[in-house]
Length: 296
View 1 (cartoon, rainbow, N blue to C red):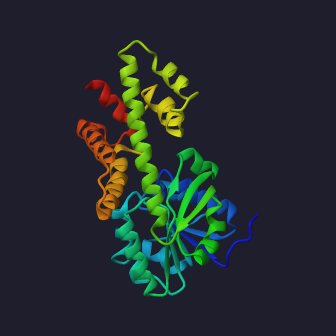
View 2: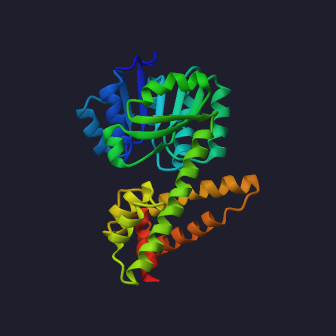
């Protein structure tokens, strides 16, 4: 086992589709006490059975931990635990907060400045890959932190990730993850369009993607989102939803706007995602955009 830092208690807030298996891997591999909190009692009960301690509130987690992981759905949820009787009010000098979610870059840097003024530190470490990867401990994580802080938290992140990239200072992890997702959404839309045109021209969609996978159009999105979702028409809930995709895309559009750059492909995908949401697919796995392209 990798030698861990001096943190004795690891806090964890947010036990959703990704957070619960990440927290479980920390319990099993870190050798640390892990103290968790979520508004939903079911994942807390499951994790308690695996050896996780359960906190009474957000403030309780912060007061008892030296390092706190957040795994929340959006910047809005992160702000909710930062304000009120949350992180900013209860944080101590020397404490570290690591945000595993995809969030606004401007908010990330603002929160980091506020914690720095209190002698604490904020790192962004958004996660990529699937729910299965979270369970297997094989996520990809993009970290924004000082080199010293990265060296401290990397062994803990390795409990649930196999690919860890130090992208730069605070916010750089979010920038990298946001652009990863932007490229993914545009690629999935291209696959959805290709499948729709193929079907209406007598070419089997599975054969199409099998063939494309052998050439220059091959991609992770093709082999996963295309083969496993678009071709079989499988767009479950409790996966990475269309609402979440539009939320992440909005961060990319915000970055581009701040830089004075117009990203027309991303703007178009925003409209495509919004149309799918308006048609009632907001809670479905985001490749559901293929269903709506076909209907047009």
